[in-house]
Image (cartoon, rainbow, N blue to C red; front, side, top):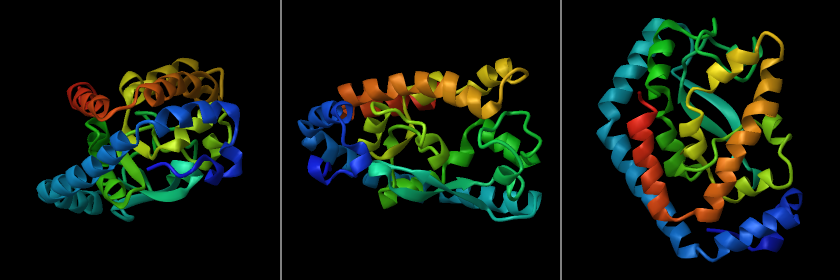
Length: 230
């Protein structure tokens, strides 16, 4: 649920965020249904997928040294920090050995990591984040603070809702590494993401805020299953 506008963090209080806040404030029932859906489905999926999660955990442990999960601080609703759950697909301390943006041919990716990333299995542990309320099934992908600091006033409106596992932007940019590779010889990877990819993804994320309803969430979840895994 939304808190009162005057209770928002000061950095989010501007006219552009207020525009989206007013739209969402009229959909409180839809927001409640969204949270109930998140709790119910994440719990059910965690129970159903437990054998798969266990097998992947064992394989990761055998494949390379390091923890099973990758825990990185990301930003969610109202700018709150949380630690995301993902299966570790890269070598230990990979984020200290290169860009925070990862390409498919990144040398930091482990052997098993490359396989589970291809079909997005590394995202499954985020069901824990959804159950805890840090994330939702649908919403703006949780960014690291380094990138959130580059948000303009309108982009900050995406922090009115929890970060999500999937979204229209995630579907449309599921192969964003191809865009990065296209410009990587001339530009820094972080610059490519911030200047060329993030602004375009945000157009989809802001459009989602305008049109938000639980049926749209269900549609995006179905589209993710049908398209992203290809």
